[in-house]
Length: 290
Ligand SMILES: Nc1ncnc2c1ncn2[C@@H]1O[C@H](COP(=O)(O)OP(=O)(O)OP(=O)(O)O)[C@@H](O)[C@H]1O
Ligand SMILES: [Mg+2]
Image (cartoon, rainbow, N blue to C red):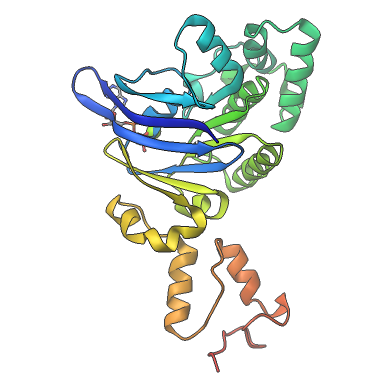
């Protein structure tokens, strides 16, 4: 059963701009989902709806098959289950110190002090900021602030985690750490939905891809089926993953490769040391098919 479903959701900002228009899609429990789409296509608006921060004008959201409850108690219950990491950490941080900021959410859930402390401790360890627990938030770098935001959401122990462009602005080492963190969370059963402009990452990481255009979900499909949806992606202004373009170029030269979803996997496959299945010659040049 889907953990969260959007059913024909409409939303306008002010009375004018369509944020979401007849938007329908769903996220399977425990799955990894990437939202793709051009600037202004509605990704952030969709995440704000999923977190209960915006409410549809028409249509509805279903959480575990039950319509979202926008009463005070309903939103409080939602906050226990669904965590949103904003794109810009400055929109999310308000504690004076890192530990204070991360403890805000669990305190708000009404947890007792030792539990809050344990959760803050664990969340800071996960994002590698334990040593900076007492540091003032306003003196942190962008990447450090982003990690504080993630710790703040993890301390709530959500079972649906929403992230708005989590990789943007992080250096390559931090991006790799972020990806490892996402691996651990999904291994622990957390459902993840993230908005991204990084099609290579989305293709390698996600179970399901959802393509937004002008506030509408124009396609949802398993990431493994992306090669069959290239026209849709291109219609939505999305580039194709580099690994797919390379596989197409290789196959045009008669070099057959399995449908791998990351350049790293393809490079490993083609490298001379990768065993009997590889198709590279000793000098590193790929071999023609017999
Ligand atoms: N606070 C706001 N007030 C008015 N219009 C808004 C507001 N936020 C978003 N919009 C409009 O809603 C539409 C969807 O915007 P949204 O931010 O959801 O897109 P996005 O897919 O997240 O884009 P990006 O890739 O740039 O982050 C756009 O037309 C945008 O101009
Ligand atoms: Mg956005």
